[in-house]
Length: 59
Image (cartoon, rainbow, N blue to C red; front, side, top):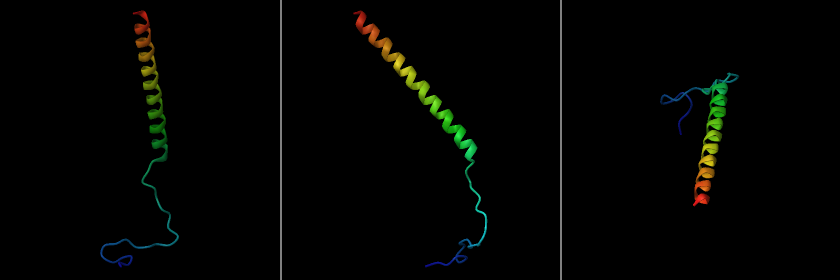
């Protein structure tokens, strides 16, 4: 078993503030954009389905 600081392992530091490698704000904005794109695509599929149903009913 390796100990902290051995074999190029990191050290343990008490009372240290851990920094995140994720930009929360940007991730939230990206999530909102992805949700809007998904909703827009779902509406396109619904419109295509309605048009197809209309064409089928015309025959």
